[in-house]
Amino acid sequence: MRRMYCGLLALCLTSALEVPVPVAVARWAVRSGSGSATRVALLEETDASAARALWPVAASMEGFLADFDGEASAIVCCLPFATGRECRTFGLRRYERDGGGRWVIGSAATAATCRAAAAALRENEKKDAVALRCAEVAVESTDGGRALAGFASDPCSIERDAAEVAAALGVPVAFAATTPAGLTLVEVADGDLDAATRPAGGEEILATAAAAGGGAFRSRHLRSPREGDDSDDGVTRSAAALGLFWAARTGRAVGESIDVAHATASGSAVDLALSLASPPKPKFGGRKLKRRLPTLGITFR
Image (cartoon, rainbow, N blue to C red):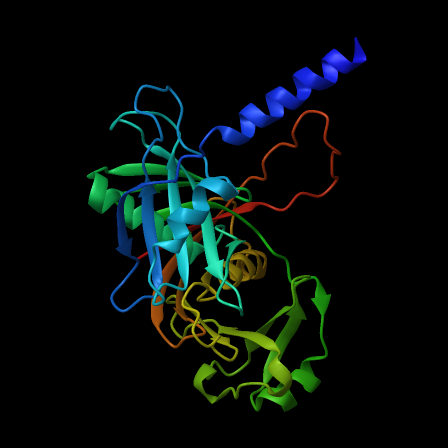
């Protein structure tokens, strides 16, 4: 009897190995912006008669990724959650080239990635609103405000010596603290963000100040640009820290908008409207935390 079971198992394994794995196919693939090395692709279903969408596995994605030219350093794959043109919910997977030129899975939960995917889907699929899902966040993107919601907030919980930071940056500092992820937020006392010097040693600094006359807050992300990488402009990290900081500093209520004129790490300017949402309830069976941070909504002006 045991020999018969072993024979059946061997037969099943042999049959499974002989089943061809379908290569993922893109309905379209576009650049995420002029001159960008990031591509956004919408994947087709492997079988039109099957009521399920293609989710990328290593075997099906290997051939797909090999077809992209050497100019592409990152690919954002959008995966339909349902069949048919009416589908408006898409999963995101991001693939990046490592130092050896091989494709590896990266994080899709950045504002730059979600913004690029939402823009490409609305433009190429002619949809006024889409929902995006990835491992870390759930994003609702609407045509009217280009708003992305659901990014996890990051608190400035490790206070720094203001005098020490001021000496390093060359500007007067009213407050300085670091997030658990290593981003140091600095409130510049005189508001002159342009005078702040890039810190030595590679420390990541987010300088911010209140605008004179009660206008939008201002911020400037100081770090050395990552060579050959246009995927992470630092907006996600900056916005999460700025939203919590200015909400606490000014006593803003949850849901109230905070306008920020932001200069990214790459030097580009972007106007943001930040709003905090109540933290999601913990999933059933999970450990219930006493303190849960709100999530962040980012609207690009």
